[in-house]
Amino acid sequence: MTVLEHFRANKKTEIKDADAGKRPITSGDKSQDKAQTIALAEDIAEQQEMMYATKKHKLLIVLQGIDSSGKDGTVKDVFFSVNPQGIRIVSFKAPTPIELAHDYLWRVHQQVPQAGEITVFNRSHYEDVLITRVHDLIDEKECKRRYAQICDFERMLYETGTTIIKFLLHISKDEQAERLQERIDDPAKNWKFDEGDLVEREKWDEYQKQFSKTIEATDADHAPWYVIPANSKTQRNLAVASIVLETLESLKLTPPAANPKLAGLKVK
Amino acid sequence: MTVLEHFRANKKTEIKDADAGKRPITSGDKSQDKAQTIALAEDIAEQQEMMYATKKHKLLIVLQGIDSSGKDGTVKDVFFSVNPQGIRIVSFKAPTPIELAHDYLWRVHQQVPQAGEITVFNRSHYEDVLITRVHDLIDEKECKRRYAQICDFERMLYETGTTIIKFLLHISKDEQAERLQERIDDPAKNWKFDEGDLVEREKWDEYQKQFSKTIEATDADHAPWYVIPANSKTQRNLAVASIVLETLESLKLTPPAANPKLAGLKVK
Image 1 (tube, rainbow over the protein chains, first blue to last red):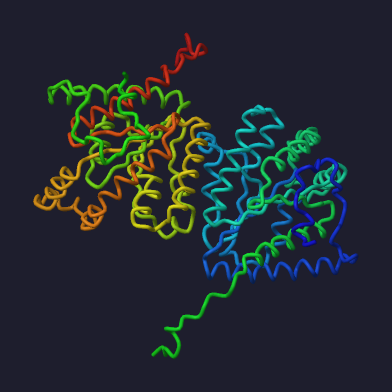
Image 2: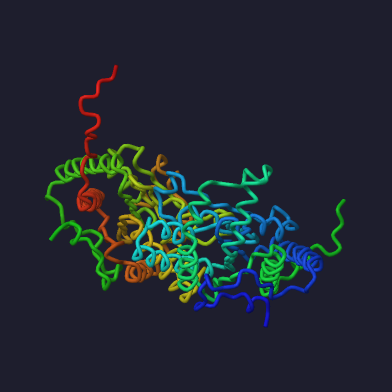
């Protein structure tokens, strides 16, 4: 079984029942796992260079997960080696008045990768069926309509040359408590803490339910969801890096071809 | 029969057989028709003011038509009264390298109207199934895929609050010959002439065929096509202005409600 297959979301899995603490692909040795992630990150960078030079493929990576699930950490630990010219990280925050005056996909479509580029969405259009549904800002009927719109949108991106992979970083409720407490207790981490996180935490079960529903409605072979047990940061990074690399390798990228017209040309 | 019904595209109509010279809604008197268009344009401006103030509706108007069919003229003659703050005209030209590095809907989605706004697309995403198909830049299979993508896209816009109307300005081949000749003969109009127009003119029949196919594939009650006989500019303006106004009136716009909290408030 490939790593891709291993973490591929099962439409029937209830996220609340998934074990956030499991480490299915560990070597058993933490420092070896970390070294392995670094090696994978370097391979990702190499693949990206070929993408950038050949400008044929586009890669869209969606990161979702509850507060403190490790989205920022994943970006840092998996993509640090990639030439910043070939990658863009887009963090979607609460929409601005101008964004709200448009359809919810408007700001998202503007940020999709161009040919040769990797774009990572740190949160995404999925917030428009997650936080909005958890807080009853949209009803079930509207939520289903959005699932269909998102499927159409992602299918169009796929059909126009975009490879899409989507990660749900899954932590346990206890793990979140620890992480939030650390942000409160450690003055150096206070800036990461937002009182709103405690409000969202009260909605824990509802979030787990909406994660399951969303994955069931929007998982597709051309836009697969991967559910990553993320209590262990080492395991999370290893899993995400492996999946990103396997996905890039499946594109069968090659270095750009030499230009025969240049053979023998001497710059005077 | 309303003006809307009168000009609504019939999915079975072959555009090549449609009479570009007919004037179904003329008063019989040209100057009266012109005066009527001016009156309609003023009513449109009034409706737009209510749209702008209440910021609930979005109106997207798509203008398509062969070279010299009168897209620019229609913009000028129908929307001159609207407060420029509430209307945006977007002309889509040949895509730039950055636009081409994205899906063809990328640049289009960025320009859709926001709440309170009318946006007129002077050419549009329909070029991506018209000129591209006429010149065999895409094959029939890709063209059908794009029809489906366009239908999905417009349905999403509709479901998120956008009213869409689409006009095909239809002129005859003889009328185009006259208009292009005028651009050649009149030095003051030379700037409007592009030698490429003569190349496109050779593809006349193919354009008529693609117009018919496109309308058949993308006409919908929530995104209707109107086929406007446009040999007569007066008739064209009268028809377009009538349809735009009837569409705005169907939104049942009302002036923004008074704020009861302001009653009796005195500025000191």
